[in-house]
Length: 382
Image (tube, rainbow, N blue to C red):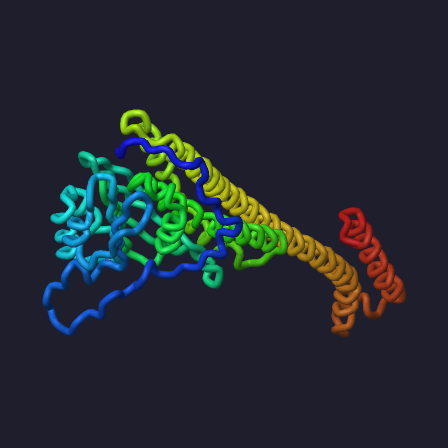
């Protein structure tokens, strides 16, 4: 770490509206077009900004990494190099110029790393995952940033459009008292920018969750899929933010050992507070989505039970009607059967020529109908 210097205890204020900062390249997202040949591109082709600072002021804008090293007048100066999507040869060339550890360079080449903090001698290697919320697709877009922070240099390697480091550089150049603290101040400013970039993501996720809660209780059948997809976004957001706390605690643990400036300690604690809030909100979102999914499943089950109950009641009412129809059909069938038997008019049927045959047939019909009616009535069919 650099020797401790005194300066005015004022740090740049945070933006009141984080979403007002637009995602723009540091200087050029594609500084040089790719030639139609297979020749190895020079390392400068991946450099989007390069500057040498002394006492908080830019003194050189070197055209190459070797020139940046030569431009460092003494140990109190600092080179800040910004690289965008360098290939392996370009990054290896930068590593050779600045003496970067091969393991850190390998991680930067492979990319797709988890956020982490590693120390290789007097150089810090930091992996950060920036995030921005895409409202149209309700998706969180993640960017990866690798930072090499040495005694007299800071090298940033971006593998995506975010985060916007041009805003960080402008912020630092507009505050020479902060910039003169050296590479540590630049690292903390980058951490601050990445953490502040999480605020719009948190707001977007909160808005989606509010909409989902409304859809759940309105019975939208498509809400289950939306809950699942948003849960995946929240889990990925947690993976990007949660390791930050361990990284910041690791930096805090080295304050005394590396004689970190007191104002930078306050600055880091402020970043830690914001990161803690983001992590807690992300944890809350994941738990809330789990509860919403449970509530939605309960409501769907309740709706299905109500539909089944309605179907059961309709079936019961239908059965009651069928019982009544069947009972009356049975009652009417008995006299019809008797009348049909005696309506055959066979000569061998003695009742046909009996004087009491007709009254007896009517009596049999009446008794049968009364008996059946009584039975059905007692059973609740009528």
